[in-house]
Length: 271
Length: 233
Image (cartoon, rainbow over all chains, first blue to last red; front, top):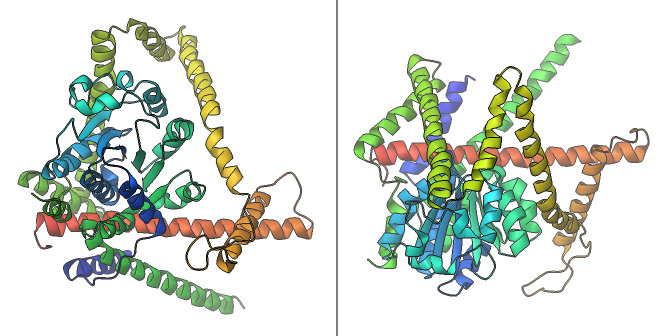
């Protein structure tokens, strides 16, 4: 079978359920429920730190997660601070999360702040645990002085007293930086919004309690939308995800059967 | 606007960011140009590829200036007067001495500082989380239901999981244990089981990799059919 026929089948398997949704059930897993319950359990006014540590390539998986968690936090009247170890992540947040906050009637500087990007990875995070203002140069993503943003008065450094929860949406190694330099030394709970590719690697840390919760790619976003009782774009993609997976399973079985038959034939020819 | 209405906004905007119609068209054309590779290598694909490389390079240059150099000189040094930071900056510049004949040895100075600092930094902060992982491998074989109506009773599923976990950890470590030759049945069997454990883990990793790639493809198709063509609700 030529590769392009497989591509055609794959596109059909995705387009058909997108155009005519099947409505396959999305049942939240324990890992997703843990994040939902964590945010539900925080008292109003608590500060949640969203780390937007992904680039444009991970938008389809991680942005729906970030949008759902951000909206949930604001609906619960929590304060949200956004930061990124990725230069693109904070810009994505400005273009996509800020409008959600405004549509909820939230005010920049009072209910949420975008600190922007500062290069340096783990060293920046260590700096933020000592003096966040100085580490970020005393300004937010747009160069506004942190002293002019009322919410920042209560966030001088990353510590357990100031921050109730860190949620790291990451497509790379930033989770290790948060673990090593922030959450383990300070005791701030850490939850992870993970790309599906990284999910297996991160699971041992959830099992050991180093992550309080973990969202698994687009599936995790859909589960979170289900918990919010508001099906969104992740949910609408779940049927297509299931049908495409089913097609790949069939193709793997088909390919292996052909391989086995071909192997036997080859064996007979050798004899 | 009520919270429910606001969440409707979250549910319905298939465009992740505020894009103009012209931007949507450019993104759609670029996507189709890249997808054309599925048919075969062609000039449209190559053009899109070159444009992407050029844009990524330009973006990198701008980001280095905007995120590294400008904040350093304008904020840290200019506004906050942290002139001492110019010393490590000057030491860092020595890395370019490698291209000057006779002064190449100077580039080893910042390199040795980076290596030394990096190694010390990692050693200072990385072991703690790893010790938690190590501690987590000490599992109880006899598991009980943690909650629900059977809380406290024997949990067969959990017990099997614990045993599998223990066997998986030990045999995987045995597979990478190269000090002793794999001659005896214990070594041979344990490393064989370890190999199977690794294969299972790789299978699971492949599964999630497929899941991730499918999500990206679905995202693009949603963009083309929904945002660009308006065919999806």
